[in-house]
Length: 149
Image (cartoon, rainbow, N blue to C red; front, side):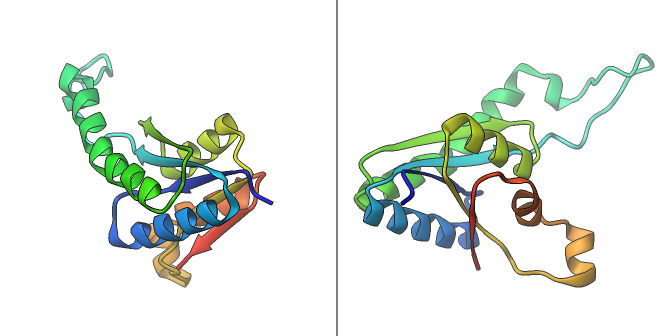
C-alpha cells in the first residue's frame, strides 16, 4: 500500500500523537519513514535604510541555533521510529519555510506516497485567525494526507 510515509512533527504533545500513529502505520506496512520538522522564517528583524536585515536572522549563530532546536525534535523522533520497529527512517529539517510549504516540498523530494500530520481541529474564526498549516497541506498536496486529531 504505502511504501514511503512522511511524518510531520513540531515536537509538541499533539504532534507526538501523529508521530506515534505514523510510525505504527509504517511499521505495520514495512514502509520507509521520513520525519520532517520545519523552522518557520524568523519574523522579528530590524532593517537599515537600504532594507537589509540587521537582526539575529542574519547572524552566523542563527542557522546553528535553528538546527540545534530541530535536532531536539528529530533525534527523539528517530529513536521512537527504531523503537516502533521502523527499520528505514530519515530525518529532515527544513529551515526558513512555512510549515505547509516545507512539508509539501519534502514529500515531493522524498517521493512520499502518504503524509501524516496532526490538526487541532479548529473551526470558524479561530481557524481563520490562527491559520491552519494542515488545511494548507490538505489543499495543496498531490499525495494523500492522513490527519490525526
